[in-house]
Amino acid sequence: MPDDFDLKRRVAREAATLLYFGAEKEYKQAKEKAAETFGVHFLPSNFEVALELDKVAEENEGARRKDRLIQMRMEALEVLRLLGGFCPVLIGSVWRGTIKQGSDIDIAVYNDDQEEITDVLKAGGVKVLRTAWTTVNKRGATSESFHIYAETASKHGLEIVVRSREEAGKKRKCETFGDELKGLTIKELEKILKNNPTQQFIPT
Image (cartoon, one colour):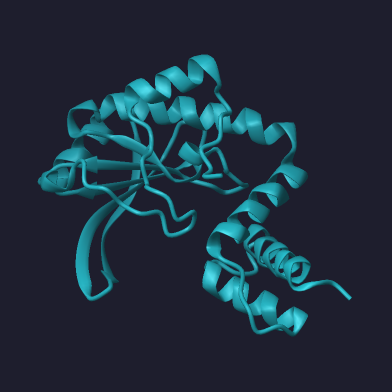
């Protein structure tokens, strides 16, 4: 009989597999479905599932994954430079180094005129697909952000979240890994690409 620790890891692995192959889109639903599969009532943390998801992606994609990560980081750098006047930061799985098939390049910028960001992207040759406002309610506090969905020259998805200038520098907690959502600035990403282009940023 597997002990609770081993069982929890198996549930995390099953949840990660469901997420990787697209059977579930959200961590919560994936964890609940995995727990049901194993007939247990406890759930792994998002962090535990994320670590397993990284392993599943590595097992399924191998060396191609690292090549794609470098390419996506190089493309991200181009967009960061394009948006250099708006405090751009690379976030998400391309920052973390935990990409999987279908991952987007996620970038946060800070400006009070959302359309200006869209115009700069278009002028720079970025293919903008659509834009949308998103409202998030966390612990009773509601915040709005403007999202620009675009595509890079090599067809990678690009999602840019535009937040107000007053939010620049504000600390944010990552709901998946539980640490501070730091991301990479232009200079930091340039340094990574030069010294260790596939470096991962996962809390230990």
